[in-house]
Length: 348
Ligand code: 5GP
Image (cartoon, rainbow, N blue to C red; front, top):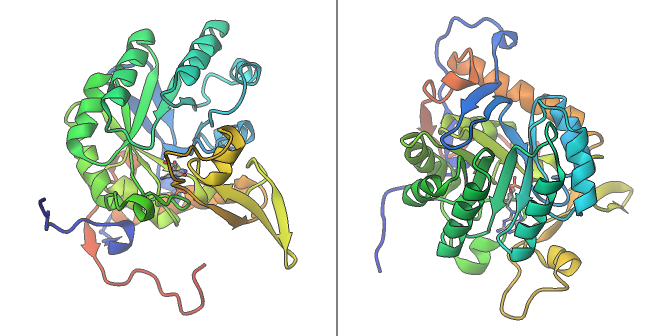
């Protein structure tokens, strides 16, 4: 047994220090980014915020709404073949939408079938391989296999939280490594296993490792406010993935419920009992659920939330004098704090 005593940070432990700048208004700020990748030949341009591949959030409808704001969506993996083909045939070339899969044989064969049936120019450019635990040899081998089969795709893979595993996944063929174990709003991994890593430190350490290899990272999970998204970018995240912040909208999948005259939408983790009952015929006897179900307050169309996110990130750039999101992390100084929000009138 060993103990690491260096303090690791979460979003709540820091604030971003404002800096003098020549920027006059947030309208001057460009929050889109352009990336070329270590493996893929495709280049990317857009606002690097991605709706999570959860079945309540990563829907076709969400992709349609976020594409208008140049944001991305990782689709959930439970659509059928015909649905994917119809969707990708209709997707415009500038839309950034990830096809997601796990590492089962079924998921792999569905990917091959979708790929075979789509003919240029309707192709899948972005693929996300997702496992709760990105540390297994099987996972690394799967990433290698998919990279070999599709040399041109932009491949995102995860999740991990440490530099050495980020490097291993990039060397195995990932362009973008997804970072986060346990910070999610409906995740119970930390509670069920005691495993995890404070998300801001994970981002800082994994981004550093990835950038040294011309790789990229996507900070996944734990953002509860637009300020947290800004902190993730400040810590070096190239992309930020959001689940809970996009929950409760018209574009989300799942039931709407009325309780005490308030409207809610069911939102649950993809390893929750709810999800396993729905897709895997229940929780297998050898495992425990590592996600929970909550009622997310209904918030109408995602348009309003999207505008709020874009406005907040733009404003964060203005405070540190970053004319482009690209400069944001270089201009970020975090200060450690004991309190970040004044909640005298509640938490909203
Ligand atoms: P959020 O933005 O809601 O804080 O986090 C979203 C992320 O939580 C997802 O992208 C995914 O990585 C993670 N997640 C989703 N469902 C589950 C689950 O059931 N268990 C765990 N451990 N993580 C989950």
